[in-house]
Image: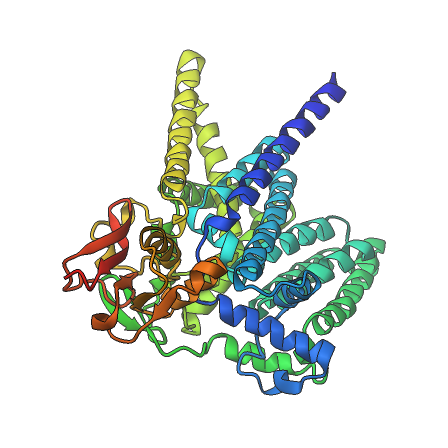
Length: 519
């Protein structure tokens, strides 16, 4: 019987992830070209030329302090496949970015299953991560923040595994995941710091002389040596001078961007953001039920802390790891006044830790609803499950209804009139569908286009080559056949009358196209 149950569980989990893989590989080509994709590819190309063509341009390259542990393999794959057309190149990049995120969802399932000791809760965790609209959309085109989030999940899993046995082999696997993480984004240094903190606590509790203490010390030495090797190995900029990583750390909080962001109806300098900028963005762009369950999960942890008192570390080490993973970066960003652009995407990597408390809160709600007896218990638990299912279904329907613009998700806490209060399609992804709509309806050989900002031009790279050649970009609206805008830095309507095409996400306008010469 137990064997049948085990096989049934494997079939369900396998079918779940096969369905998700089919979904992702079916829709990866639907998304537009985000503002940073050219820059990200240039980072990879510069390191590629340094490694394979002895081109020292990397040593003076403006973004040399960006890790390329993901971008360099993308460039290598581009060269292996002999891709030359921009559409082919960036479709490949979108697919590989999704596949990395897909792997991280599997690791998140494993992390949740291990921590909560239930494969069903593991699937719940994977579902919550997938049903996070902004993360879902970014998992196809954001090759900066999503790989960072993905390897935070993988390194958290290897850390939990390592802390269970303190074996040298698990230490090396953890070092590998941390090395890649740091070489994607230097903020990944947080994970080794957490590792050292918890190993130090264990050493102080158990003592060095005991057998487990000696094994622990040996494993952390192996971890440290391997981590240093992997960090240098996967980041070509460090090959000649590993101390360059110090400059990368210094530059982390002082991001090279002088622009403004729309927040609570005001345009603010990105270097002078209020302390609540990131927390508010997190709260208004995650499904409302997640926020509620998060606070329930934190309450559950505090309740457990009061009950356990002196033995909390031994009983709840994982919760402390998740707590540091979540709050250490947030507090650091606030204290250091880090530059954050377009919401909280630079802090996406804390989101899986946030979800661990969301899951804990959901389990707490289910347990609490079952404290009654008899038929009341069944009714309250059923009511809780129904509310949860309705909420998750609502999020899923938003994602289906607004595909491929899940990146513009806000919950009810954000209020009304969103376009005048927050950045909407700041990536400029909606330009692609707008350009395709023009090309479909206008059969002329040359079509003059005026766009409000760079993504309007960049998105032409996702258009088929024969159609791309028909687009001519002009400087003045009066000289154009069509004017396009995603309302970035211009939340008000334009003084043009002949609207040709528009995109709305649950009532909020994110793209408009006007026919100009018809006026």
